[in-house]
Image 1 (cartoon, rainbow, N blue to C red):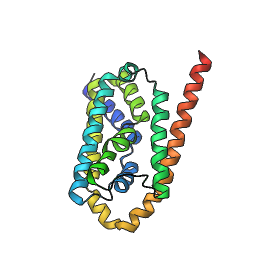
Image 2 (tube, rainbow, N blue to C red; image 1 turned 90 degrees about the vertical axis):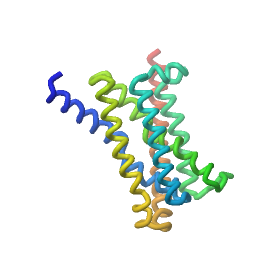
Image 3 (cartoon, one colour; image 1 turned 180 degrees about the vertical axis):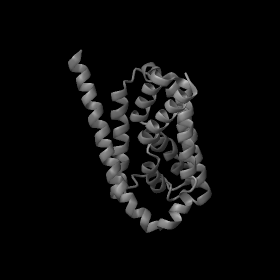
Image 4 (cartoon, one colour; image 1 turned 60 degrees about the horizontal axis):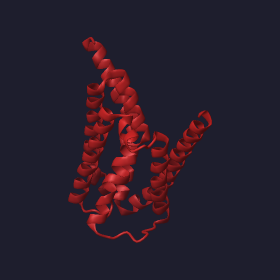
Length: 205
């Protein structure tokens, strides 16, 4: 592949992942979920989230559907499961429910893996996109494009404290309710698309 073709392919892969991963759409959710963490721990939570997301991305880039197939899980089933998780979180956020969650930093750190790393950053859409891109451009190019996207996430997340300072607690509360509704809407879309794919698969068999 000529250098010019490689560069064009790289930026095509990069922008495809940039759109589907949606760093600026995920940031408000990170602010809401990390609100009760002090400044230093919010920064550590950002690093942990992106470390888990990077690991998952590399697994799916180099393993593709083999990972889900190993556990006999189809992508539509994964989509429905991810949607259900987001739906529960969305309802809790909109209504301000705690549902027995502990108010300590250990429990609060749990959001770094679910739902932040998966399914928000590495969700069904991202997984599907990476599998398609690998088929077109190869593993290395897609892996580099994914790493650049994660670097952008790192920069944005590590300025979360500055953004939080501007918005304040009341601003975060308002965003929390709005994002809870968006959470729930995204969840419904995930579940709907997953169920449609599952039903279509059954009908075609």
